Image (cartoon, rainbow, N blue to C red; front, side):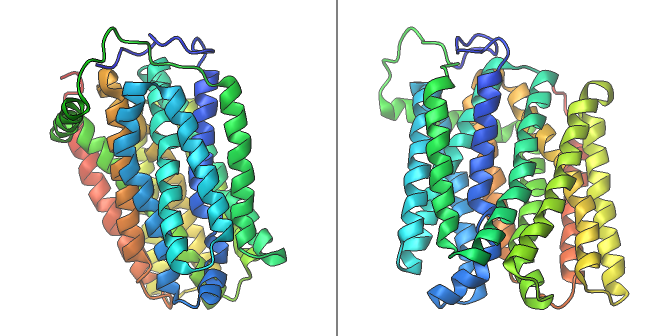
Length: 410
């Protein structure tokens, strides 16, 4: 059993600074691994002599590894401790990034992207469990909003850097940069990250029996609406942002004639929009409450989708009519995601690792599925994308409404 929050003995656990730093690093590295190569997707397709949809499979591979691995990293962190598993994950991420910078063929590239995603899943899953060890209730939502800020920065800065790197060097330089960043993160964590999971009196159970317990705990979480509903909310809200991010390079670079550097510049505006949403959570969650903020974020997503649809039906398909409404949608995601991430761990403080891992799994596998669908949308009109966003908003509304009726103290 996982100890209650606040019982950890990590260096800096009284303030959680080291744990928040790790969570921000894990989020930033994980999302940079996904987003930094977006401006270079057309160049990758050309170098590997594959189609655009095939090149975008590298995003799906990363997201699949990112999600599935969290089902393993979380329980490993619960058994062996947060610190050793965290260091293992960052090391693996760094090595996979180095391999991607050197890989000769697309098949090996896909495999290494999958491995890189597996490593990135460690930073997300284990860092969230560290936060839950230190924070509780609304303070956890505030901590998650800080992590969401690092996500927002990565969402904008990673494609920005990737675009400029692609304009002066090969796309392989993107992964050289990730190798350097991973090495720096590893050096920092070795020095600063302490253990937040206290030692238990006995670990005499066999691996088979422990695996059975983990699977049983996952089943229990999936049957509990206090976990499942916010986890699905996070999955859809993240998919809204990631789906657009995956499709947009070909929209802007092929349909609108943007260079990789110009596309990277646009990503800064998306980062700013997500940052606005995350800061709103941090500043108002205590006063407004989590459920009210969920509705505010959902309202922004719906409004942005409706405006995009109206412009598309009016015959508009240009950078402003596509990007403008999407900024509103992304700001809504910046509100919904950090709250949705905090809710499952608040409901299950004694199973922070499993709750974090399973939330991350659903978040990333849902993202992978949505990305796989979005990349097949036609790039000659924004109406299909707007209709897809509106459908996701309606599903989010149903989930939020159902969650407001759940007895969270059960």
